[in-house]
Image (tube, rainbow, N blue to C red; front, side):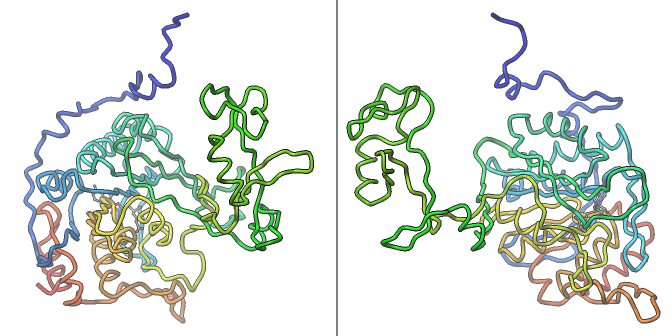
Length: 424
Ligand SMILES: C[S@@+](CC[C@H](N)C(=O)[O-])C[C@H]1O[C@@H](n2cnc3c(N)ncnc32)[C@H](O)[C@@H]1O
């Protein structure tokens, strides 16, 4: 009976609802509008590399990147960790102003939507986007992502444990999670499935039998699956039909081969089961709750001191999963440059954008001089040091290009200061 209600499949293909708010620009207009901004190239790495830092508003920069044929439609991974609509000003550990997170409601959603629309154009057909948010805007942003990337391209809503439990006095449960929305551009995408290696204890618990002849650990699984089949897998094997309403998981000839190799376990009453070996398992597949990637939480962890700096190992996991060596990673809200360092460590190309002066100087320092242990940010008398003066190394200038938009400077002094750091 036709009810007029779309089936789940239809729903995923054509979203029949969307979030509405004032001043929502049509998609075409977002893509067409040119912001007429000059982008100045302060130095070029000279090599065949896409690596670049852009200092400017990311909408201007993303639109500029649309004109670059080696970037448009070529980006394999976009990771963004934008402002979360917290109505808060963020400063570094040295109390230097980093950025203001003040947009809320519809203005926030439209700010994000316009940038996401352009980002989608930059993604490769087999590219992925990971959007890091917290509970403030994750729900409406899921609807925006469904609209821009298609609900059928939604892959995961990842919950990350961001910190250790806090003993706060507020009258609610402690908040120690944030969220990453994972979408792809199409149904064919790079996904180098990550696994956690088995520990001895867990491996032996899950694979609870030992083969006498070889000493190999294994577990037993059924060789049949639900559903009736009329082909080979529904036929007799070794004088047995599959149980009622089921079929063999393999053709009888394949089952013979497995049995010959000793991979079938026969119980006393003649029941066959397949052996799955621990030494052939790549580990435990990652799920959508990540507990091991808290942000800096002890004095020995190396950090830049930039607020909201994310866990480098988590970024390495995302980069490894969504790209291969030589692919391009883009972060349009790069902050201290965590995703850029992850990409660099894994031999990927990277493009980072930020409009905060402190973010730019922090990522420049990080890329050329590394980070410091969290404990080193606290001085003897409890005074915290300001970011120390530094100059970009010649080595790092060979590794990436640097661009700035003409919209960014409040005073020409800033440009002079930046040029001193860049040594240009
Ligand atoms: C949450 S922080 C990113 C932190 C980063 N993931 C890290 O590990 O350090 C958000 C960043 O977005 C930047 N940002 C906000 N609005 C921007 C805009 N319109 N264009 C470029 N960057 C922007 C801020 O300056 C800030 O550095």
